[in-house]
Image (cartoon, rainbow, N blue to C red; front, side, top):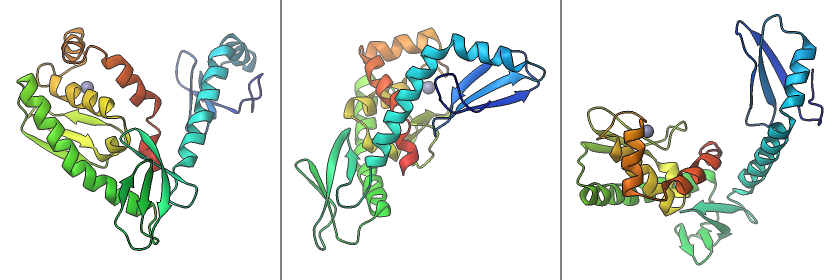
Length: 224
Ligand SMILES: [Zn+2]
């Protein structure tokens, strides 16, 4: 089976499992996991039953891919900084800087230049926000490490080390605050229990909106 009824690319993987499940990969192929001896007709019925979900999510992934493709350090490209999409402009031998809705680069800049700039911004911005929030919330932590791991926006270890991804510098300030609050709340609860989320909500009543932005934009960790 290569396509869904709606023409969306599908790959069926058979394995030793009991139920059917599906998810999209980053390229927009629907990966269906099916039990070993399941008949193709059953898989087809499953896809037909879920066609609305499949279409909706396929469109979402296509839109994200388009957004990701816009991020390029070249003429006509765009760069993300604190949730804003800035136009890329080259200007001789200048240092990277933001001017209005433009991010200005030296003529020889490329993606690495942009990454180095974001990492340098992260080293200033994230420690300042984290120590401010920790003070305000009355929660302590041991140290902050800024990471390049693409799998997570942040984490907090049992010993109190907080890790934040420099990729956060591409996200809106409110979403960065949400990650910081989330990790600090792990100092109170090392799980994602109801009690944990109640603490997050206490410190940031509208956190769901900012969490959703991050969930919808996790692809930006893969661009760089
Ligand atoms: Zn967590």
